[in-house]
View (cartoon, rainbow, N blue to C red):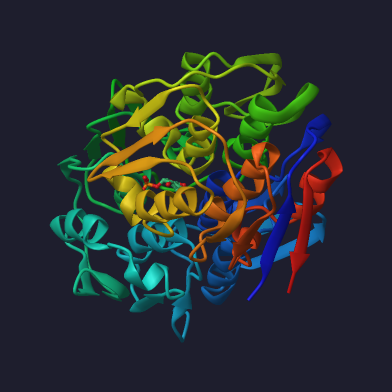
Length: 433
Ligand code: S3P
């Protein structure tokens, strides 16, 4: 089992780029697969999660070329051109892949079975199966969890779905199934979630109407292949944003990061704590806004996080909890029960990790109370959660003794090259196989 050992830091500095956005890379492959023509993707995230999606679309009969680093060419087979995989589709650690494929496989004329690694096999899938069934899909889960078995040949009809949880994965699965349904499909979100599906479907020529948390998709006759430039992943940049807030020696600049407002809640949360952050050099990569993020060190103070920001920062809480540990006073996060069903139970696992390095905290059913203060050394078990592992690597910048982080191999699911990049800006991180 791979581990990190991170020595207390003397600070970070420099300009860096992070790998491509995971959410956008998954979608580029899936939508490219069912488009007519060849979709060209640059900046593709070559992390294990997106490679699981790539393997799945290949098994479904789609040719995918990889002409160079981060470059992918998807030879779309058209809306009705996918073929039976012939064996189980293995989604690895990727919840996004499994949930979006549930939407995409439901209207196909063939049966499919979706499985994943031990973490994914524990995650809830009924939240997706339920609305898909109400569209006419035939789906079985096992006590609500994978394996997910989908019977082919179902004829779907459009629905109006009031989503009980704020989940972009559920929304996207329903919209994908809606591409094949009879009539329009509408999803109403209880809170705004990432809108990459809506933006990208429009780039493929699909009519999608989105306003005030209500999204409607009109079934198209075809998706037109396109070119997609994937921006840097804000969720990967988050580790270096927090690292710079708590430990920059001089300004740190992260270049070419996707700053879609449905993803950047962390910036607002850190600004509330007194962080010194600036977005500069605004541009766009197709349908997505991109900027460079400049961070200067600042003294952070504890805050109560407004619950409306939770879905806009849903993947950034492990890193944010480290920022809270370095702030003066108490930080309170509530309304974040979704963290319990991520790659790990991120409330419980982060709380145990904070305990291990001497940061006082109190676990709440739907969040965490953290008392900022000194960070000691210790041994942290990431429970195979990539974002927990990277967050405690960042915590080393304020630690008084080495932090050992167990079970870090899954960092490669979202952030290949994290350790090298972290070292290049000044983290004293050693990897052990
Ligand atoms: C994602 C949506 C989020 C997020 C996940 C990626 C997506 O999940 O946590 O990492 O690409 O749609 P939920 O929609 O379940 O909150």
